Image (spheres, rainbow, N blue to C red):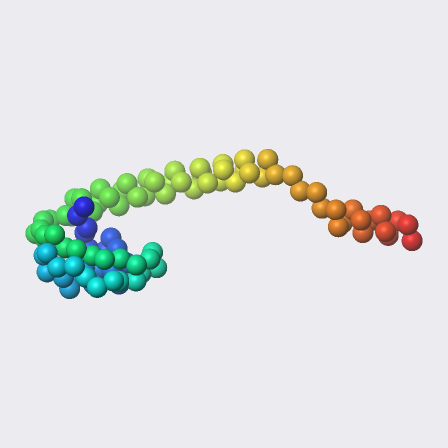
Length: 97
């Protein structure tokens, strides 16, 4: 798909910007792994509206993601059972002294 400036990590973007249409990059390493990049074509397009829409979508996602993550953590905590036998054994040993 199409990429807009700033959508990728700087290493990836710099390698992509150095390519002409039809060229394939040397292997590029980013924090996400190794990549081969091929630029198929470039477009001159005012993406201001697209970027604003994408940013709004990201903000909405983040607002929904945090409460969902907290709910998931609460469910994990409710299902968790910890039997700390070391503390029980220490109490028994202290009482027997």
